[in-house]
Image (cartoon, rainbow, N blue to C red; front, side):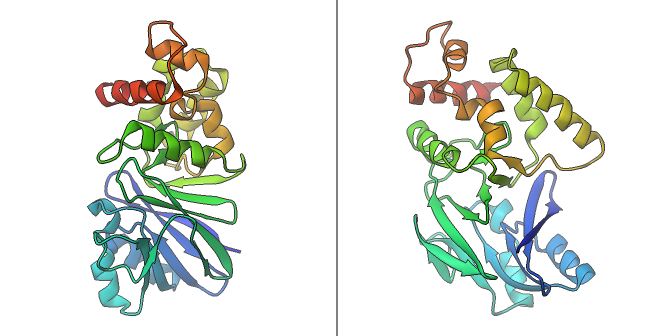
Length: 252
C-alpha cells in the first residue's frame, strides 16, 4: 500500500512523495530538488523514480539534480521529445507497476498539449489539469481539449483522491462563488478550506466527488452555470460554457 505525503516547494507547489513499506519512494513533478533531498535525508528514504505530468519548469526543474544524486532513477513522463530525461515514455491508456501498485496513464491535453495524469489505488496525480475548485490555464490546448480531459477525469469514481500540484484552492473558491453563489456544498467547502489554510494545512487531496459538487469547470453541463456565463441563457453547449468560464477566470 502506498502512502502519500506532500513536499511544499516554491510559493504554492506540492511535490507528491509516494512511499512504500520499506522506505523506497518516488516523487511527482519535482520542480525543485532541494526540498526533495532534504525530505529523503530526514526520513531515511531511497528515491527510485520520478513521475512527470508536463514540461513546465516548476514541475521538472529539479530532475537533473536528483539524477546527479540517484543516477539510476526511473523517469516516467509523456512520450514526446520535450522530455529528454524520460526513460519510461508513456502514452494514454498505458499502464505500469510501481511498488506492486498498478498505475494507469491518461493523456489530458489542455494546460499543455502533452500533459498526462497518473491513476493508481484510487488516487489521481493530475499536475495542472484539475485543481480543487479550478483547472489549469490553457497555455497550449483548446477549450474543447481541456473540457474533454476534465470530463474524463470526472468519470473516475467519486472517492478518487485528487492530488493536484498547487495550493490554489482559496483563490479558485473566490471565482467559484462568483459563478455559483447559492451552491450550498460550495459555501460549506469555503469554510472548510479557510480553516485548513489558517492552520497551514493543505486543502489537498480533494476528491472527484467533491469537485463534481463545487468545481465550476466540472459543472459546465449544469443550467445554473450556463446561465451565469451567458446572461441567463441555458442553451450553450457544455464546451461553449466551459470556454466562457475559462475566459472569465483568466480575467477574474
